[in-house]
Length: 129
Image 1 (cartoon, rainbow, N blue to C red):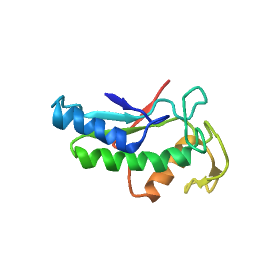
Image 2: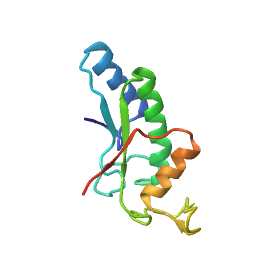
Image 3: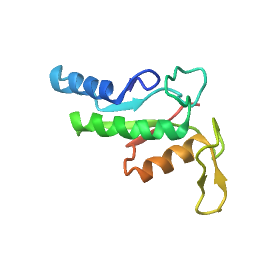
Image 4: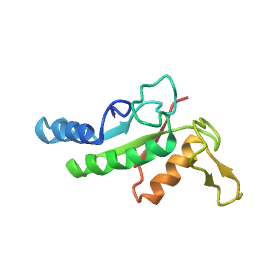
């Protein structure tokens, strides 16, 4: 699996890497993930709102779209955390659990709900324990 640079990188750079790796060099990398523990303040993040699940989701949707435009056969995953209230890095974007009616600001619910509204979903999830 290859991790593309989310913290200081761009979707265009990730797409160029996927193209170079698989179309030019023919390495055949199938599994890619976007960033590493992007919810954590220990990771670099040069975006305006740092370590923000909403920003990560909107950027991840761009990464997935641009990377798959270069190589539709790849699978792209995103970083998640357990629990509905884990890694609340701001309270700008709440999501409501449809089963309980309770609002949450945690990393994973905000990321997944935002990506769903953008109609771009990851192929898999990455969780570090």
